[in-house]
Length: 294
View 1: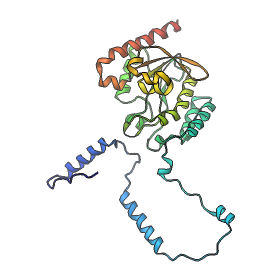
View 2: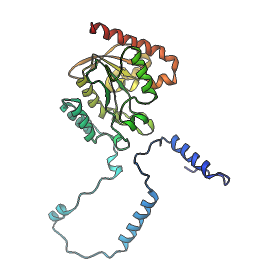
View 3: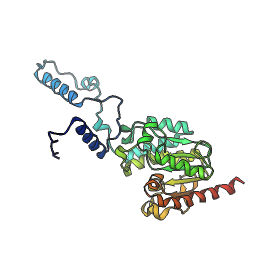
View 4: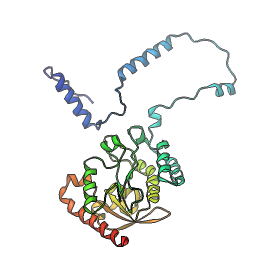
């Protein structure tokens, strides 16, 4: 794709501003490394090394036996393009086996930190596991981490998280005391894009196990993505507008949980008139929890 050259009259500041605006439009809004990397210098160094290698005389050596050659050959390092693959069905099966082996939330988090089967881990800064009281009777599951969550390593810490905290406070709950919050996907997709079906599938065994280990009385799905990831089937095709406010059942394979889909706080920030519907859902959650407390 060709781009128009900047006008000669454009100042350095204007050119830098235009460059950063283009970065933001392309989804580049967070540096992965602490220090910038000079890719041009790296490319030049690689080219010089290749030239030197071609120019160097090739020594003549006696051929080694095939078995010795195989054993002596050093393992090749994996490149970023080789490791940044979309999860396969085999990877999903590995995720299921790993998740089922966790007996505590700490074990599950440690497994996720070692798990390399999700390509999102290669571009994200942090694993965003969960936040709140792990013994809470109310658990809320969001979609995927955003920029602020990726920086802090905690779910719902940006503007949508602040709104969620106020919504919980309005029904007498808080993440520090009697609510637990997680996401259906544990790493931030680049540029805040929607996670792919494969990325959701490889995270699904872990979030299901996380729900089992928290063992809440009620699970609230915040937005369409957790509904699609955890319920699947007809629910995934129905859309959040049709599903919100209607109680459903989440079957993890070992236990069934009472669940309620509602709007994601980020959507409510864009469509404030819909807050009245989300407020009804949270009042319904409160009314459902209170009889069990008496």
